[in-house]
Image 1: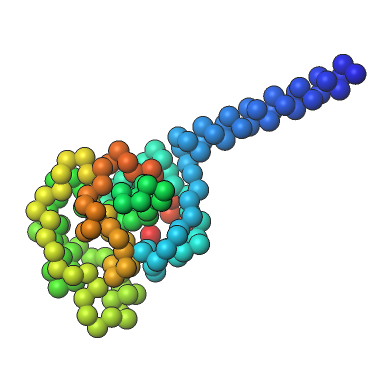
Image 2: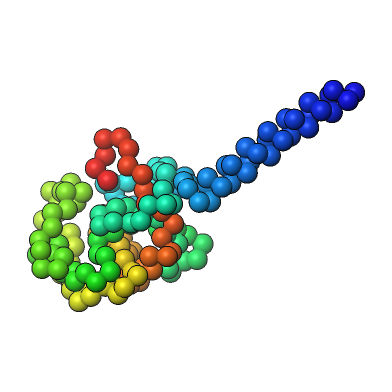
Length: 168
């Protein structure tokens, strides 16, 4: 009887250690998220599962996950367009950051399908320190920083990990 109890205790210790390791990894290192909605089409599709790196600092054009500023029970997945201190301008469906023109190849598929501008003209004079300007790739349906403003860097949960053939 003592051997059976010892065996059960040994298994229980392994299970507890595995759960602790899983919780630490999930909380501080990596997490799985599910895409819900069309705002990142055609780069990401609703129902797709992704992993995020919680340690990486977001950089320009990374895709990030963060709590929705306008819906406390949701998370958003958007692309980093502007960094702290940047001046952003969209003019004639072209992105300019600090006066320099930038290509956005992830929008090419939508731009081929549309006869009018995908991204309406706008100017952001300066993104505040500690904030990021985030936009969805499906600009016509994306609820993003154009509507709720720049997002605090501290609220970004993680950066989407790239894999496969897709151009994230």
